[in-house]
Image (cartoon, rainbow over all chains, first blue to last red; front, top):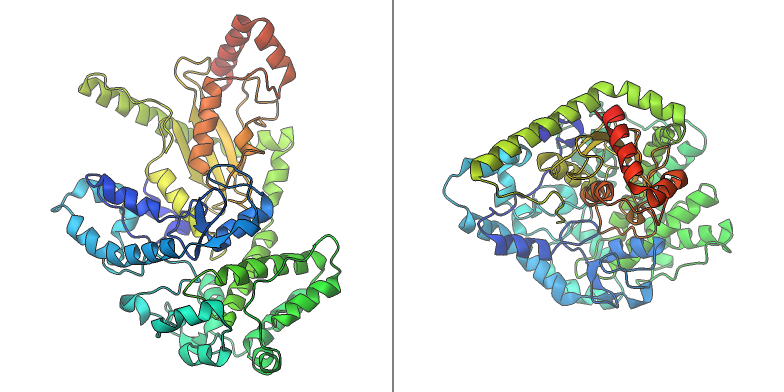
Length: 383
Length: 149
């Protein structure tokens, strides 16, 4: 089935894999990928057993389960160490990848690209080194992609990486290098000028014409929105941060079971974050912030605090949207026998299609095998 | 849309472009976290020839928490109960964020090929399986013929 036809997948943008006649390069490609997010390492760290992950990935994972995701050995946050060599390797591989990809490309051989139509639409992906690394926090752009978008243009000075990681970061210096979320920029789709921080939401809503002011109706939701706006308007950042310099030191996790909402609010206000919402909201905000903040200390390409705040706000918003859509309702419905039956009935045609697909594919495979003379694949293969 | 992690998008794309033998999965049009899945019964198992419908949901915390998977097709299997719930370690305590949808579906297919009555979810089925295996297998074949075609 042609994936590019799915409306929600059309935005996927990924560098094409190496052709199968270069298994070494495929292996190399895989070796700089984090087993949790399946993306090239960002701020790689190692844990006790020697496995490495993105700092934020393993921190999130250890919050849920104190085991190594790869080997299941007991693990804890205290074991996390920066893996500078791996960071260097990942960076330089990402930089060299487009060049090597071009060198390794066989003379026109359509059957490989045919299989992956979604990627064929992005011939650029092969030539621009920044494309593969599309995490929102990405600040590792090489010079090729640096100028593409205003939000990404922050890193102009590569030589100060090492100062940043072990000392304090001066916000002023950061401000010189980047546009803040409050600056305006053209929407990449409809070209209307908007504050940078509101562009993702604007695009998601299908590019409505910009309103002069976001309407802040709704009770608590409205408050939170206003609060985030305040954070980005520089009010708190500008005023507070000068009196109260944010310490670039790992945040120690509070005991969430014992922490009062006031404790949580005080942590949040230390970092100029919104303090609205009930305890559950506060806890999840503190948790996410600690992951973002602490993992930002594990890289030579740290993001600015304002970029981290924007990321936190994005995460919170998307979570809220998911909730509002009531996605979990479906699961509850499927918990009951009647619900299950109804669902199976409703989806009969869809399942019928999938069923036919399998039968058709099996038939084709059988034909192929017979043609080949019995070189049978094992049905179970693990990647 | 920005809420959907890139990992889910990539997994979906790969799953659909190159799905494992005997397995199909497609996300719903309006919700990319929710998949309709079909799994073919493995060869030389009582479920051979049957095509089983499943439902897979990626919770908000995925990949930190495992996907939720259920059989929608009735199946006679010691590790799958009447409601279609599956007793499989990687869907519970052995879950790891390094696993993915593909590995989960392959494991479920493997579970069909290797029922484990010593770790039962459907007690009556498991007992029957232990006490009178040939009768249990005949029953499983019968259900496959009846419900999974």
